Length: 281
Length: 215
Image (cartoon, rainbow over all chains, first blue to last red; front, side, top):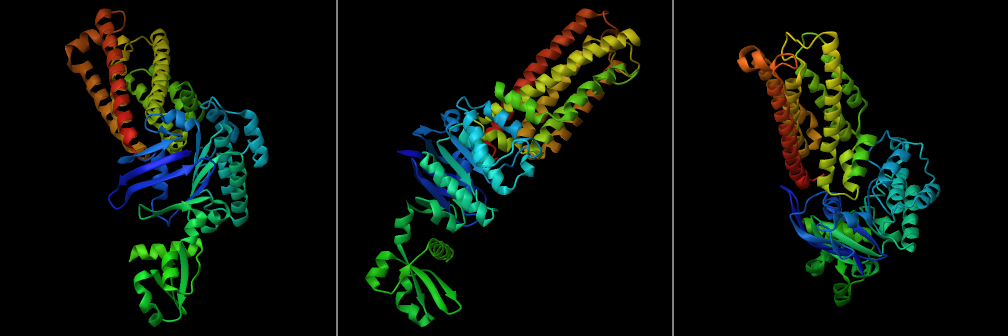
């Protein structure tokens, strides 16, 4: 069952447009939403909850149209955008107390448990928290009203490697507790650690929606010692990139098998770099 | 709505907003354009909106399980509570003024029922100008307030001038209560009706604009 379905979402700005963005998040899955800076990740996530009003398209959470069931849907989801960006000088207990009044399902016992798990001190203010702790406070708020789906916009941006690893570990724990997660990032290693599926956006268009493993298996990385070696395969190569010692590119797995080129498995970073290069050509 | 209103008072209210309520005491100043007292009420609302902007209130609020239009309604309701509180305090201070100084005011309108009626009208005009502009772009709260307060001062200037040039003001409305009580009661009623109507219109326009705003 899908906890989130997006169909043909469009939003046009003067110099940028989301074009027919469609994908879904299955229950209990962690979905990584990737793309380079400015690809449209934040615009899509904000459009889901009408922080940005889409020009057209449908968004359904738990099978319910968001436009019609906004309040009911918001009771079941949590949106975290890079930590707490509000009320920097208010104590955390004040923010939590005000927030709790909006959720009939607010579980104070769970909130206290998350505070302990995340080592959060309610006497502190958001401005006293590190970036990682801000994200954790946002997560505690979202999870204490029993959010079934977490939408996180670049939650690991600006975190040190240790904090990132801790946060990703939390995602995996939450997944075991039945929470579905959609998170955007441009940090590839984050996805490799915890995502089940990926949604890849480039310049406002969805380029791929797939389980992570099958996405990885659908490409092969090739290297050439010189430009002359490239020539016979030029039509099949994706995102040919010149390097210090020759050049590299991607091939689809089907092309690699057909052409019998010695190719290595591609990692996400290679795929993203070459696909973006191809899009720029 | 109850939770949103609670949020307004707990998170949004600026200390200056409360302090400005006490400036209702300006009604005790002898020979002073008394309408100006109500400008401070609008300044309090401006501080609340400014504080909201500086503290990321819009971003916090849109995450809550409410619709965007509820956020507008709650802020306007908060302002109505604040304006009403200022009005009640102003009535109390005007009673004190009458006791200490008498109602008469050489600088403009006397402290009487008509003053409160026209003040309600002024606050309605402020609400209709400020909130639709503010919710079109909450980041430019200063611009919205500048336009609304300039308009309010122009209206104050016109109303105070009427006390010196228009006979109905000079002879009937700008007099101590209970003289010409029925005329003043009519002005008060007119002020209340316009305040409610203009504030309601402000809410509807602001809701529509905020619903379309990308935050």
